[in-house]
Length: 82
Image 1: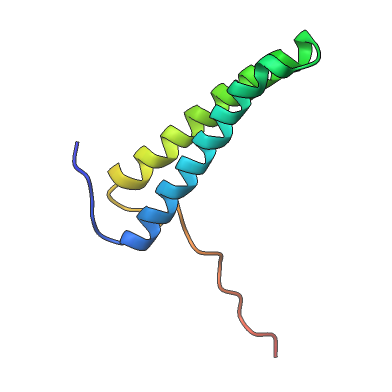
Image 2: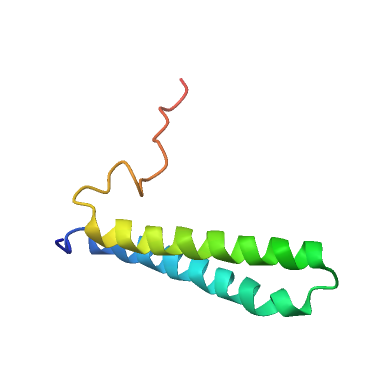
């Protein structure tokens, strides 16, 4: 595996996005014990697991993908209406 260091702003932004997803997932897992019933605890568990997997995927993709143009891209440019 090779860590790419070009396009640092986009790679750092994607990494921070992944860290934010992981933080949200960890918060969901920690708060699972305070759920008022078993259904909400189950939802918190699986949301936390999903957010952590998505966060880890975002961090790994941001730093290990050679070309980020199709992954973390800018919004499309629209032509001016005449």
